[in-house]
Image (cartoon, rainbow, N blue to C red; front, side):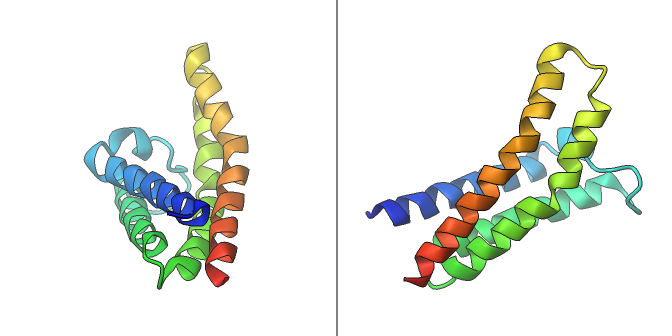
Length: 124
């Protein structure tokens, strides 16, 4: 397996794991949904979990990898507001929780870059 394939497989695994967690243990994710969004937080949690599973499948398959990776980059950018909301909401929690919430913010950029790189590698 090439390094490019390994990177795509790891990205697909990350997305699949996150998607599964959104569906199997949704409560922590519900708490990250901005309150100003219409509807129930659980709906957003479930939809994002399914989206992550679809993206994982698309990235895992060579035939759809380029489109899947590009969509994953867009997804990572789109969920950034939930990470900001989580950091804000957890500002008064104990330090380990605050640190975890704040650490998520800069981690979105490498995730986006990783997905873009996988998508570009799939072009070749």
